[in-house]
Image 1 (cartoon, one colour):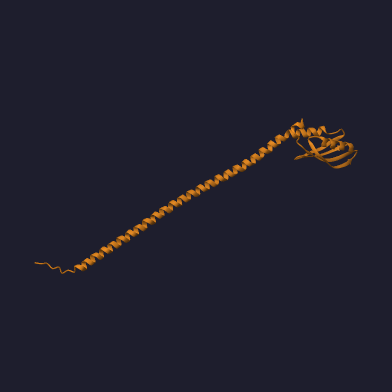
Image 2 (tube, rainbow, N blue to C red):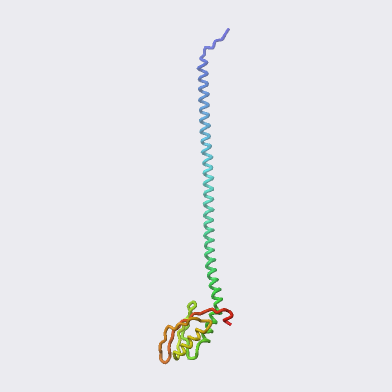
Length: 182
């Protein structure tokens, strides 16, 4: 006998296709959601790594800034030390000149003239002294002007005190060449 299928096969086929379509749709949705979660997780990891790199770079920048400050402090300290060294060397170099200048002050002093105070300010020596008369003060100034160690004597005041003349003058120290100093 022949079999006749009276079941609604088209409807069953449509339902199967519908279920398969819904299953595929759900699977695609789950796969898409999984991809989105994976991408989100990947980007979170990348952001965390970038934050770590940024923190590392900031820490290194802070270290380098400290080193730069230390270098600047060392340079400043070096400049101060070099300035001190130059000042000391200049004083050491001027020591014989100062001694020779004061020795020359004794040599150019005529009889009858006496020093009360000698004050040195940079290259200027201020002389306060006593003399018996104006001629001795003039002779003293001529001797100062004729010395290779002094230049530009300038008499600022002469006063009479008892039987002596009190005078104030300034003279500029010079540093003669080695040949002239001998």
